[in-house]
Length: 155
Ligand SMILES: [Zn+2]
View (cartoon, rainbow, N blue to C red):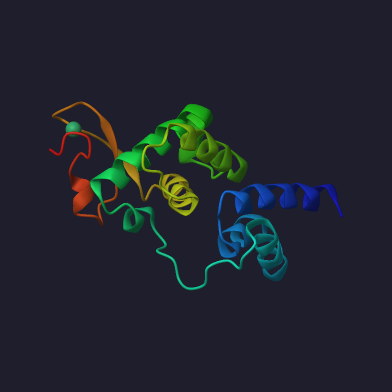
């Protein structure tokens, strides 16, 4: 195994451990899907869930509580990564941010949602909007009608 492969497996293991499914881990690391499915089964004691997943953060942030949790994850992630989170998707950093977020989460969003938030922020699909009423910044995707409102004050 090359050093690069070893590093990819280390990242893959961290990602699988927080619950990210093989397709996401494969996209991130380029490692063999079958071996990632085996890894998932080994770590979780059951097969990875099958079927299509919502592929954008906004589709997974449907309720006000989820949007507030998404914001808490964002703040944790931004504290660790700073402005570079808008340019790059660092998988290890995303995992570290998710683990840190779980310590302060109230109604935890899952790792898949957190990963999509990180990816959509990098792509600029998800952005931050400043609430004119309460002054909080919140996550905004123009495709979500619900996200046009601030989840903190509801305005
Ligand atoms: Zn507000």
